Amino acid sequence: MYQTEATQLNYESAVIGSICVDAACFPFAERLLTVADFFEPKAARAYAAALDLNNNGKPIDPVAIAEAIGNGGVEYIANCMKSVPSAANIELYCDGVLNNSKRRAMQDIADKLADDSYDLSNNPDEVLDSLRGQLDGIKSASANVITAAQSVDDWRAYFQRVKDNPEYAFCKTGFVDLDRQLGGGMFRQGMYVVGARPGMGKTTLALNIAENIASANKPVLFVSLEMSRVQIISKRIAMASLLSYTDIMTGKLKDSQINTANNILDRITARPFAMTDKSSMTAAEILRAAKQIDGISAVVVDYLGLVRPGEEASKKPRYEQMTEISADLKAMAKTLDVPVLVLAQLNRESANRAGSRPQLTDLRDSGAIEQDADAVVLLHRKDYYEAVKDDYTAPEIEEIELIVAKNRHANTGVVKLAWHGKTGKISEFDTQHDDEPLNAADELPF
Image (cartoon, rainbow, N blue to C red; front, side, top):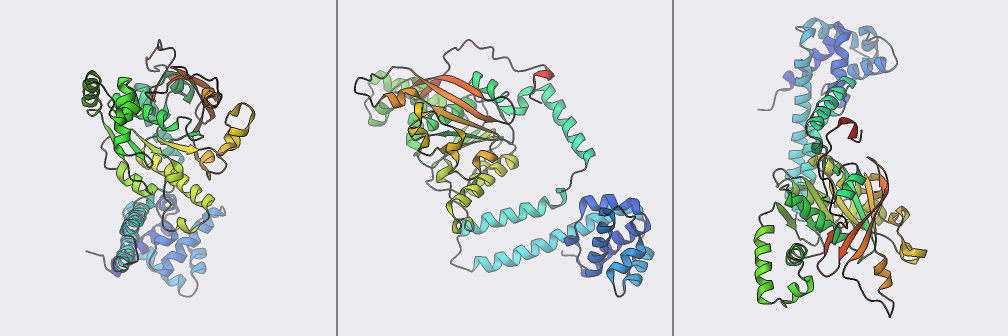
């Protein structure tokens, strides 16, 4: 049941009384509460005055706080100090204030939801996504200030975990050279961007990475805003069987090849590879889909330009829309505690450049994606540009360069992989790698 106004005020007066009786209570209250959490105006003014005194390096003085309240301030502070049962219970009082603040916020949301639900012009999914965001904001409101001691405790717990199991820190792409270049793999809560011109192979690379993750029995979500589920399954079969993707899609397989395809299908469908193939999704909808997957290890989004902005962002210029979408995808990585791999198209400048090699500046039309990304990998295939020549004969295996142009966790550099054009399979030229995980603490990228 919603608490009475008197109960709310009792908690608030107890907090104010406690910090006035014993200034040592103030740091605890400051970590949990903001001025907006107080319902009674005098309590809010008193707490704001205490914050102001502390921020200016002055002691928490009941007289100064009373003066800041104004008319009736002296009597209010005196009553708070007199009525507080025990300043030692400051944690209990702060929790009471914070819980009541959350209840009021929930009631405001409930009232707005009631109005929005009867407005037929509203998109129900947009309303629900907004509701979830507001509720998440209420839930995390008390965690917006983190002390140095808490940070150290969190770091120690994390470091011990990665020391015991270094692979906890990241999700491997399955390509040894790429993982080493990234610092071990794609780090938790990181956003990784694969940028390329159309047809260069970014979807194929992303599918290979997603397949590698799933084959390690780690759940992955592949969000395809461009291909159908039939096309995705066909690509997965081709990659695993080395059968021609075109032959699979056009039904030109021989009986023996059909048997091979069916055997491969049984194997890959047993892997924790989930997908969506809606042609249009917001970042909030992608997050909602990802939350349905237990133990999710990574999310792959194909591709940034097709992610639909939310209702409010849709009214803004395209660059601002892309910036907000990028921020939402980065936030998704933190919320899920997994890496998010995002594909992005580069502008045409790279195609007109000598050698056609892409650069970070080719992402400039994609909002703040470059700034938000933990790492940016740009794709380049020399044979892609050679194919326009009359005397060109496509090799069975091409070279694809993965140019790690930005990397927060390790070094930049170039990784070269083998591109099997007909099947969509990407592999390493040298498969004789030491796949043992990093064990020494000094090998960790900290």
